[in-house]
View 1 (tube, rainbow, N blue to C red):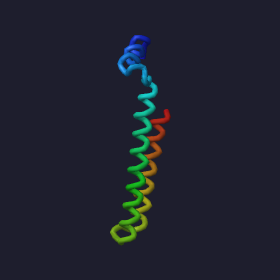
View 2: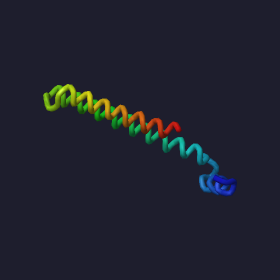
View 3: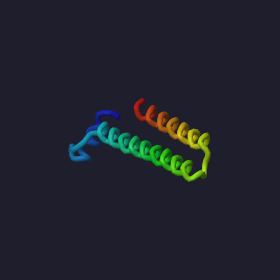
View 4: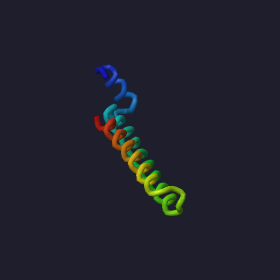
Length: 79
């Protein structure tokens, strides 16, 4: 972002926040959504395992996949 774009962004927002603040907000919302999704997937797999809809190996596979997806998303957000 060059100086003219930064100035236009500041004028457009009334100087209340910068582009870096907006990026951080978007990343925070994305990380929250990813964490909530993984928590929901793990909980659903646990309930299904408790009701004998899936086996223990399938539950652990679902958990491992969701944690892997969470790790990749968080790695992309941090870097």
